[in-house]
Image (cartoon, one colour):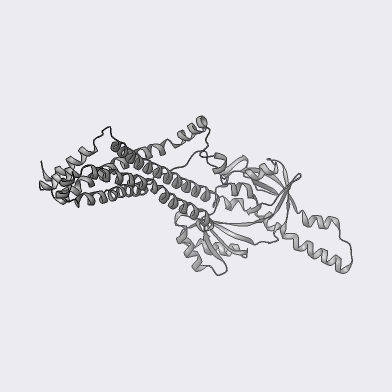
Length: 428
């Protein structure tokens, strides 16, 4: 037998299934590695898919780049003209955005309005694809409500909602101070007109898939937003569309070079930074937490090999007495750990990919059979569990699992190599 085949022969012989407690521990170790790799692939793929799906929803409803000053953006048309000269900027649209008080019947909410110019807004964001009722009609005094906001208010297409303008609070206070100072009387219709500037007809209802947008936003014409906030011809900011939303940061840097402070540009990533940072942090935390499953399995492998070393003390002594080299003895036990790690990793890889492919069927089965809702649609606002298998992530998981199992086999192999053949044979 070749010297190289000698170590492999003994390693595979020791791993042959036998009805012993040691064989059961070996199978449990392989199962532990399999489960660890499988769960890691599933969780990381689902979280990656969740992040990408959320990005698609954000990009669909948010502008790629937003230009503003944190207050009123004066001469937005001039700013838009300068932005159009920057390479990568495709279109721009002004907007007015801020909190208001909305009333329908006896129900009141404090959402945010987004005043837009429909003709220019269509070139920046495709809001129409989010409509679930009515039409994209913002001509005159009309509004489009988020689905959750419409549900809370109880409003439907064709109803009229009343907007309380926060922009008129200063006017009301000034009028009250004038009355107090001059001792005159206020005209009730005048004060009412200050408080209740507009009634808007609901022309449509949108559903973006994000609860924050669907419950806190209503779209209104740009002139209505300007009137509510007393902006005149000005706006709060500019929404820009770029050639590639994932390269918006480069466009933002170029814009900030030509814009004069306090006017600056922010990308859709900057506006949702906390959300995406939280998802990435959860991915990293879950990776390290679930890696402990593989570490536990690695300790099982180590325990198995140490037990084999103790049981095979006499055989090791005979082999060393017959001239077996230390490297060959080390290889016997090291190969055992490699084989267990390879089997476990391979099984986990195939089972993990299969579970990702049939994740929705498994979720439906758990919900119907065990009544366990692992992915509530009403909470996550997704019709199915998103997932995306990334080759680099799968490779990192498999390589890490295999490396951990291989390292776990080094200690028993080193222990076996240090055995003195004379003492081993004497006590055995």
